[in-house]
Image (cartoon, rainbow, N blue to C red; front, top):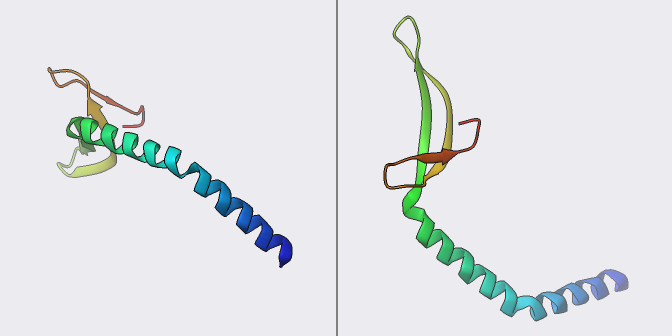
Length: 77
């Protein structure tokens, strides 16, 4: 138990020392999300079968990259 307590104390101290950098990283991440959020899109991929039924094939996401509405997605979307 003594070694585990010492390792816990070491990790806790290290995280405490990193707090200012972690806070700055969190704030930068939130800023990026706020700015990019309006360009993020959800994509549902559907197909129409020969019998007229709509078949769900997949779902994904992407983001708008220009004023004309071009969207970048992963290949599987």
